[in-house]
Image 1 (cartoon, helix red, strand yellow):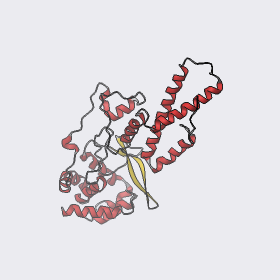
Image 2 (tube, helix red, strand yellow):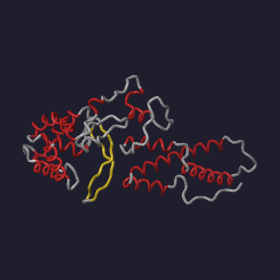
Image 3 (spheres, rainbow, N blue to C red):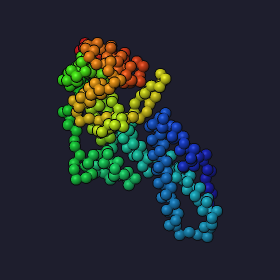
Image 4 (cartoon, rainbow, N blue to C red):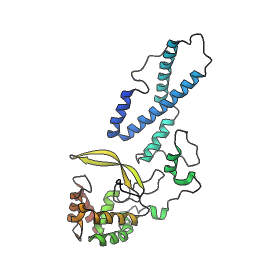
Length: 301
């Protein structure tokens, strides 16, 4: 039996694993794909090993031959993974991307009735589909309250009632709060969503700190360090409605000493925006200018 030439890297090369750890900080999507590929490689390796153990054996079953067979099987596994394998890596990648809001939207999670491979845990399925796997049915999002109008005028009209209530607590114009929601959510087009597609209603990009007791959703975000933008995955708060999002936002600004200077500024959009930036609401150095510009556009509608 002639053995194929060994490639430069084994299926589970420790150096490759270290490389994935470094890659996760630069390109989370690529890192997830690499991890899923290595996981499928491990599974295929176990299957190959089980087949060898159940073989009938032969005259050449020596220790040396077992070593060569192991090396040969390892390269077969690597070849299978690189050529697409069983499709398990792709499925895992899509699921993990959905969990971290990194999905490109090209593939959807299979419906709850479809049986997934046993490597996908019940806990992960319940996180993705709610309580649909138990006796209680998962709640279906209410489309009448889930989606915001696609046009800016409709967006402002839908949120102004909530903004007025929050603005009264903060002593500022409601338009600046609607503008803040528009800036953080991309006018409602970049709403953070749970893995099952349900809306988090997080209009203001408020992160879920360790003392947050409610639901949360993970998402890829842009942070600035020393003026340089970088991507990283963060945990954000999740609500049951837009009204709840405005109430939590008002509580944060009202009760945090960091934003004390943002209170009772009336219609001074620039002062409010600067106070939020000084308080550390965002790391973008141009954040105050962006918020002020959006606020002016809201008033002009």
